[in-house]
Length: 291
Image 1 (cartoon, helix red, strand yellow):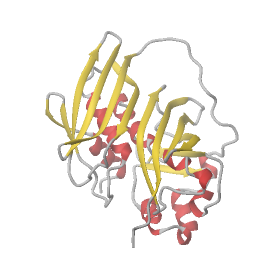
Image 2: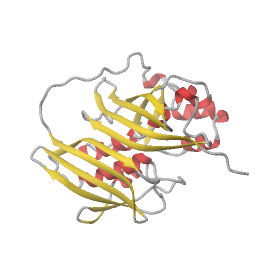
Image 3: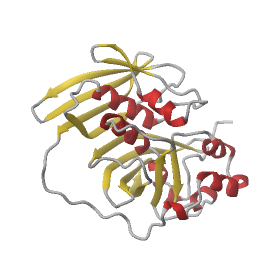
Image 4: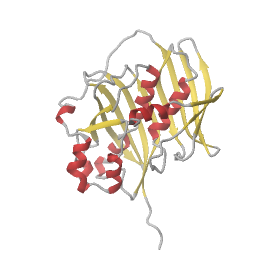
């Protein structure tokens, strides 16, 4: 049986069509639209396929324009905007049904030495070993979870999560707009910087938008809300530590105008800041159907 992690690697292994043109596919798991992290990861892979191994992605910025259709392939078209001696820039358009559904611009940098500092890892966060696993959470709260949330957690996934705060899964209490979640892949990741960056991009879209709803006592699974990622930015600081848990610390500075903004910081267990993320998402109240 193919593991969920191996399936992720297959999804990220794009088919070469011709110069600057690649094709990606989506897992057939019954989703109505393509997971945003998948499109980010695949677009980054497409950009990486046009870049020398001497260069590594240090930042990406992207916009989601239309929902992705998981039933058909996604075509990724790469524009080689700039090739410099120490920085490269690539733009990638993801196309389905003849229209762009997503665009990404990524910058690549050669390794250089320089000044260093970082935010410290949040203090007093319980170790992952002291938290319930996803399986244990499902067993404990299964009767309180809506069916769509239950199905989401019971599906095999390449990323395992151990949330520190769990109240928002089972209540509609208004909570501080912050969350800490330990994350790790459910299988080993090869020591290939380009693939590791794509895996980080994939998981970076997980749980971010949820955080902006905590303070309102709402959840992304609420059927009366239309919730979707609008844009996503990511900065790669240091190599990931895929052999262990990583802490995804998130906060939401603001929601307004049917949009919510969230920041994320991914740390190794030893406190190393691996990557930073920022995302704005649509949070729109669905209108009741006219009688």
